[in-house]
Structure formats: C-alpha cells, structure tokens
Image (cartoon, rainbow, N blue to C red; front, top):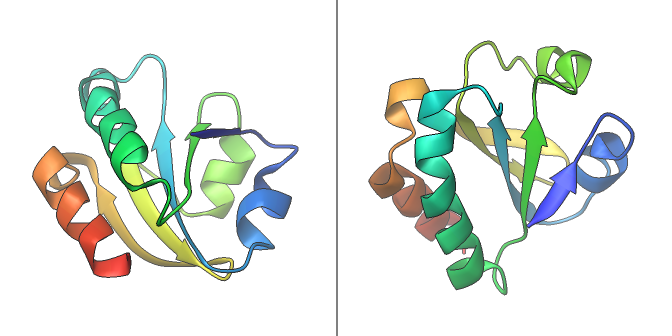
Length: 105
C-alpha cells in the first residue's frame, strides 16, 4: 500500500490514470485503527487489480480539506484523478469497503 503525504498526493492520486482506493485515516482515530487491518488485507487480496494508498489526515490537513474529508475514516475510490465514491465514518465497515472494491475491479 502506497503511503501518501502532502508532497505526493497530487501526483499519485489527482494526476493518475485508472482507478485507485485511498484510505484517509489518522493515527489517533480509533475507528480508523480498527478498520486498518481489513484495509491491509484487501490491499493484499486486490492490489493486482486496483492500487491502494493511505493518507494520514493529521499530517496532511490541507490535502484532506481540499478533498472535502470532514470526518474519518473515509475510504474513497478515485478514477482518473476524480473522487467517484466514498464511505464515511460508520459506513466504512469491512463489508461495505469490500463491496465497493468489487464494483471497481
């Protein structure tokens, strides 16, 4: 899973071609930490079909605000640099994340 930050987000996500999953999280967010093992498992399972990346919103606050990330966790799907779907907070369950991945692979 690619680690994003304020320096590489634009090049890696907004200027990329194809579909990508981005996990917006924070080290201090308990729901984020609870979801992370599932996201990493999905990355292992599906990374040949869709690239996975994660961004720590606490370290890249302006990027998060620019992407209209107002609460976390957020699991977002980007296609050709545009956010096309996202799961926010309580909707970001392992089951719903995997269902969303299935739609785009």
